[in-house]
Image (cartoon, rainbow, N blue to C red; front, side, top):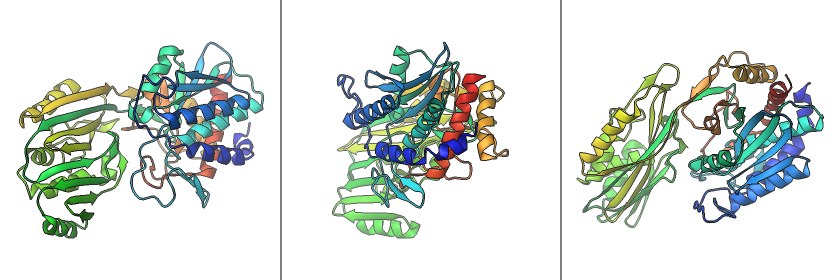
Length: 450
């Protein structure tokens, strides 16, 4: 079957449906498990309803699981192939050339938050299922496109889904890169909490999520240090502004799995404040965290030949009237001794009289490169991309693939393209997504007919 040729005839449908989906502002506001109608907020619930009802109208079976997640099903059999996508997105951040939820088309691209992470890829997977459905191909497995609502903020959605539904036997998440990602680093976040009385700092705020490098840091100061701040900006060629007693400095967003690809605004502000105050809070930031992407300052750095180095992201600061919290995230490879390294982190806080508050730990995920699932998916990619050179890899990012016993992240970003996840001006290339739909159709057919 020439799925690429067939996919071309679905191009306008893909564009229309993807634009509609991207216009939902599916940012998590507040998680409220008591709100059974919309635990992750109304826009996310509306996007889930829209996707499910659209699929039902196209002839698929659908199911909503407690408004945490849903699935779209076709095929038959005891085994299940799960395709795991998500509808929630990270905050818009940065400067956009188009409205972040406008889904504007320009030069063969659709610009929107979620275009590549992960609404566009989820729709490509759906179009792949629709092509197979419309071709009346008999499948020996159930195929379920599972749509989560909380991937960016803890994956509570998929945990609820797996409490209620059978775990897929095999699966893939169209939420990363081609050719294929067979391993994902572990993920651990923590907070450093404390109190102090500082003569300079009134408040500092930066960051919203553990998995994003913050691009803006705002400090309200009790003293006029505007001349020193302007000199600091000029000396280092940083961008910033002063409005009264409010000092703002700008960096660049990136995904926390690749913190070195961004410019952390907290680093820049902390380095300036270190020249102006003896604050223990600022001293801790500079001593243990600033300008360090690998955990060397905390002495938790680690390298694995297959999964590469541990990375660290200073993600969030909330400092108000002397009470503060610092949010930090690491992505760690197989072999990292998290228990002993956690003691070092805790010790660093104790040295300053601060408290260490760990969050949830997610262990590394790994599927053998020689597994038949990996080989089948790789062959599907190579058939339509004609790319036989790019290697399969492991990453620091976390996808839904890690929630299944045997699943990998599979596209759709091509090796030659920049990583646009969590970046301003995120976009998808329409023709590349049509090829991705063909690749996914090929993969589904091979996994569920042979």
